[in-house]
Image 1 (cartoon, rainbow, N blue to C red):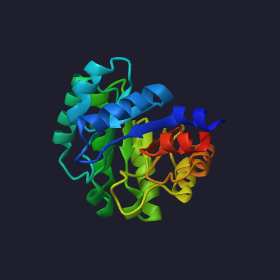
Image 2: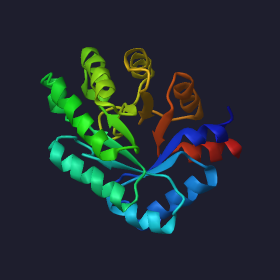
Image 3: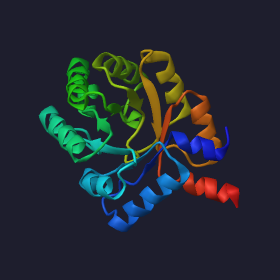
Image 4: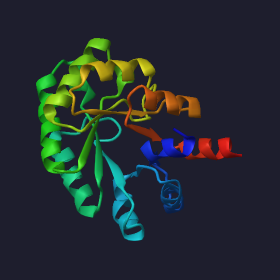
Length: 217
């Protein structure tokens, strides 16, 4: 797989709180030029991006980045994002529920958001940097039983991003219908290829296109 082909698996991302329309517009143009899987953008920009780029796949975030908003609020966020034109939803679990081992509650929240998302892709961010190995394994079960499409390692706003160890663990523990998205750990084209070869179907990154440009000279 060439570096350009690897970009087809990248959610080209801009989620900084101070992202301007110029930043988002640049992101969208790059995504179209390099044929990334999607753009991942703040919910407040969805409608404008959908109007400006009707054929672009739009991913957005819910309960982001800390995850501790109540489920009802996350459901409303999801429905509004889809109404505005989003195609994919990346939700953050309530990490405190994981630390308190309230896994049934997490599963039910995922199930509620998947019901709201319907046929749209739902990715579940578990923020691995705050979790023990046993908690990660338990959350693989939550994501599987909740009916989500992906488990995602990180928000990119925590203390660490994706690691190969976590991707390997997820691959062993998730159900057969759940895919893996790594985020926050890609610093080079070698990293990008390694995560894809390890079993990731998506990569969340703000830097992959620049990495490919640098490689291409």
